[in-house]
Length: 344
Image 1 (tube, rainbow, N blue to C red):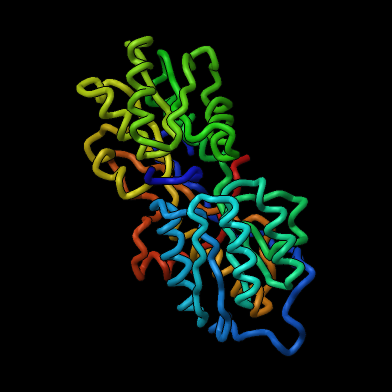
Image 2 (cartoon, one colour):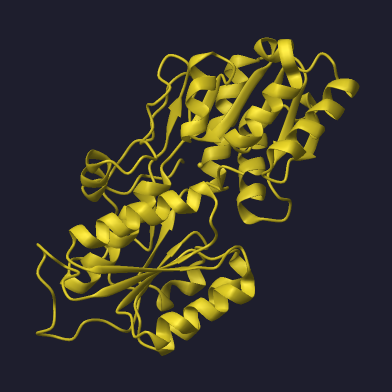
């Protein structure tokens, strides 16, 4: 599986999420740098060891790690990564390892919302400021410096707008990521609300964020509905499987997907993927590190949830969204990027 959700989240044609500075608010955590101990804004993480508790080794999280590590280094700190390898018990152990290692701050990317509360509680009790990548809950604001990520329902809604424009009539299907996850529920809800005509959606099939599973789901789909007009696929790795299953018919179906991964670019250029709602895990890693830098330097706190910008990639503009590759330009520009504004 190439990509998260979130794995991760615009109007017809080429909508780009409007960027605006996050609104200011008072810090949401009780543990803060004491007076006289604030760091320099030029190197806000100087002398600090910052941990990234990584969900797993799939590409999405690997790119997040690269963005995080480069940003922490540029901000004067030392990055340290603990990989949970998609194992909840390993995540719990990694939180304890970070505490035992006496890191100065943590970027936590949990496996699911179920583990966030206990992870944050342990880190908060240890006095370690934490930014959470995905897992926002207003009730947890007091235990975290901040939260980073896309808003799942927004990206699903953006995909719905694209598919509605590309295939205004006919049957539509959804191939989802792993059922029961918050990202999957949000993507699907936003898509359905924006598409509007639920009667057009003939099937919602589990692709499990896996290309081979998506191939089998598509084969079953086109056997039952050979005249399918459009398919919303929750990520590009699965979308490639859908294209493979459709074969020569792929050009006749409006395939809309998400994440803007490097794997999707060639399929966009060929017109086999008609639109992808793209955002960058690399940028998310950078923005999370920057949030901790602002905290240590005493900069005004942003709104509790900082939304990652997203954009629509199309065959005409296949790389419009921020790229995943952690180039110097991507890192530098991400350090200056304001949080995105939510959809109405």
